[in-house]
Image (cartoon, rainbow, N blue to C red; front, side, top):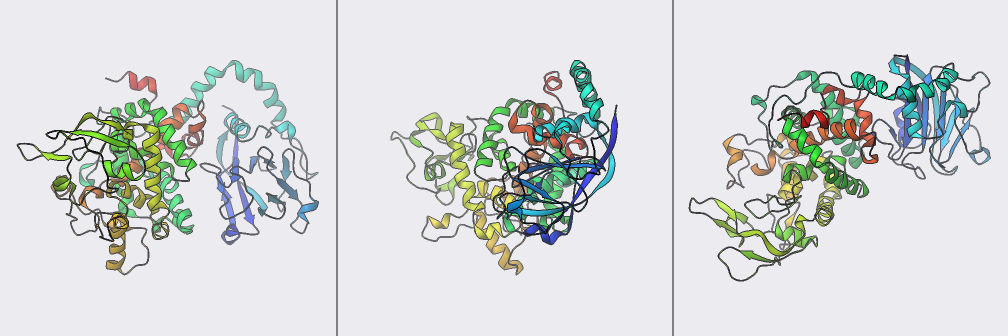
Length: 545
């Protein structure tokens, strides 16, 4: 295998929020820069006039570092910062950067300015993979198109051999794929038993953890949980400083990842629901919500439209009838067992004490609760419609996500996930009658009890119910010394764990063929976190009984 040394890119921003961070080291050899550059990219928050993917810096070796615009986005380069950017031409193709070179991204009167400090050598990387990554990041990033800004730099040494080898690479594509698979798939935590599609909760003392996977899980936790939390709270240290993370929450995520990764049935179900998962992910991104929320329907229903609970939550997202009504997801003319009149919800929140007081919940001879709405018993029920139920559920999630107190908490991801299970704040609709099962009053009580103004560790500190304390469905007011109701405590960590593995499975198996999964493919290469796991293929799953 032909290899070259890998080079990381060191930048220093001269203005805006990133100017406070000093030298920023980005993992090379391809660095994507923009407002939403995808996994591993440099995210430019707080800068006006910046596109999602504004530019790409490529460091093929220590002497050939180049920058290129993505599409028609504006990029300007100068030998130093003391220039009038209005007088500098916008790049049409890549140019080389020398240490000390300055580049400006975006319109001349907006955007941001940064200095290229240096390229630092680190590790070994695969030349063939890097060429592919660079081309996919921007079709313009090709060695033959690089213009020379600094006369001291010339054509990269590998350019002619790479150009001549393209036909050969095409001819041996199958063999190269096998070799890449070999390199990308080290043995790790993977399916070793049939297991379950979903692990609703885990007990830390009953899961044998694979400590070798912790670094990977922690990397994924940072990307899918702490980065959005940091962005939402405007506290960048939450992402970069692991000492500020919710350690207990992370422990449970590790245990849940371990349980799901070992279960072939989990991976099989992931493959079966790929298109539905992709649809939900696309809608979440369009709404500006974190990717991890796409696992909520997996936890709730395993992405099954017909799933139903004893309290008549139904469909992909398990919406209660009244909650669906609140967000215009139609539930109308439902037949209840033992009742002649058809029922349609007219409230926007469930009655207090649903198990005892809801008209649609009954008790059998043994005293166990059951849903009185017969299967298919509503003339209209859009909770089984993926499009409508997803639209309504996103509206519900944004109730919590857009709340300033939740945003400032440093725990917005996990609190918003909890709100889908516990409700956000029903007092808005019940004449200010606070329902302590809801997540907002629970968080407010936690802050008051602890004497804090915000708390990134809120969730972990309130996972206090275990065993039978959790299993009793009637004990909705049981909190075991915490403030979160027992039915909600073991909820959010499983969702995060499921998405961590889903990103690996979809990125590994479909990242090359489907655009929605392309960003996740980055996690399966080099030091991407997915290399901590043995990701099965669809073929290997079909071979398992």
